[in-house]
Amino acid sequence: MSEIKTCLFDLDGVLVDTAKYHYLAWKRLAAELGFEFTEAHNERLKGVSRAASLDILLEVGGLMLEPQVKQELAERKNRWYVESISRMDASEILPGALEFLKACKQHGLKVALGSASKNAMLILNNTGLTPYFDAIIDGTKTSAAKPDPEVFLLGAEAVGVQPEHCVVFEDAEAGIEAASRAGMRSVGIGSPATLGRANTVVPSLAEFTVERLLAEV
Image (cartoon, rainbow, N blue to C red; front, top):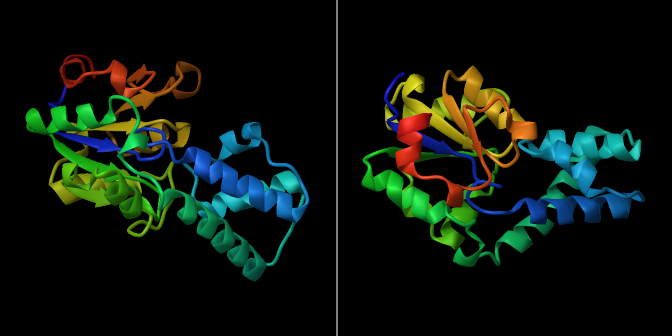
């Protein structure tokens, strides 16, 4: 098996929990449109772009809207979301995440971000995580959403490492599929029931070590 040289991390649900802020903003938008958007509905949005998320939400509500209206709704939802994440700080880093990033650097591994979020830099700066990354690929640098492998392939290219030497950390099924399509190994953060295609699955980075990564994945 190829030597691991780079760790590529999704952001939401892996390093920080911004999913709750996304959900609250989508729920608020649905309420304004006159229907309820539940946590079960919200599961379908994991790892999905903003535009695709809005399409799913409108499908739930049984609504068909003009592109211009959809764009305005997506922008409104994002304003609410940005207001929430602007108040984030280091206390919202998920358990074990900072320690794992530090351990990656200590072992000489390259560290890159592969996130669909267009607000990734705001979150990384507010939580103090920015210095731990050798490359940051976010929604401002990609044209295709996961499960397309673009975001991870760009991350590998940015640190000068071939895909077979990369491992992806993801909490979404679409992200695990994107890693597979990129020719990379993956670690699922969450439940084996939904992330079973990953090379290994752990509840959180608090239950994982770089030593175990290098030995098992």
